[in-house]
Length: 53
Length: 131
Image 1 (spheres, rainbow over the protein chains, first blue to last red):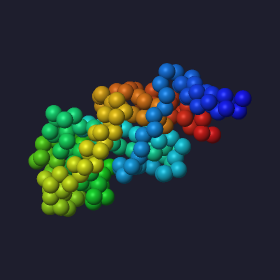
Image 2: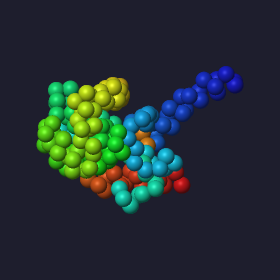
Image 3: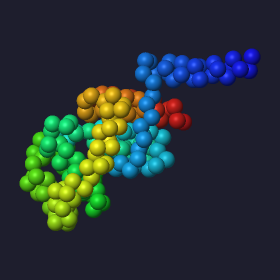
Image 4: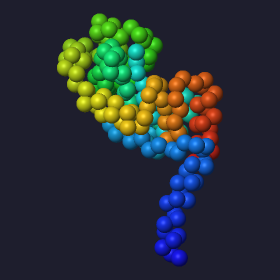
């Protein structure tokens, strides 16, 4: 029983991630040493990929 | 996004298309300006003046924002930040990005330019979820 629950948990987590915002799951994007504007503790992080041309 | 000062953090990653030489040089220019503490000043100038991104224009922008132009030129010509830009490019490819701008708002992907209200709605949702 405990084994089954353990196996099911990641699946449930995945389902939750999918259902929270439509089809696409959230993507984890590392900040690394990229230029940052705003406080590190901000509740919203916006990562923008740009091309200047 | 000024209205969210203190609540929001903006991170810039570079994804210059390989065949666009000026684009790559512009990314170098922004990061070189960053070495002198003026990334955001250069970033704004580049966005405003695009596509005027030839070497002469970039050196002009450097002077405009008060950079040490000699140092800036050395960094630009020496491609001092090619490693950082290549790392960003690899990350972009790994994330399946195919056009710019592509944004991730707390990991939620937004492709292409959108009206301000569109971003505002997502940011509001994220702020509400964090409360």
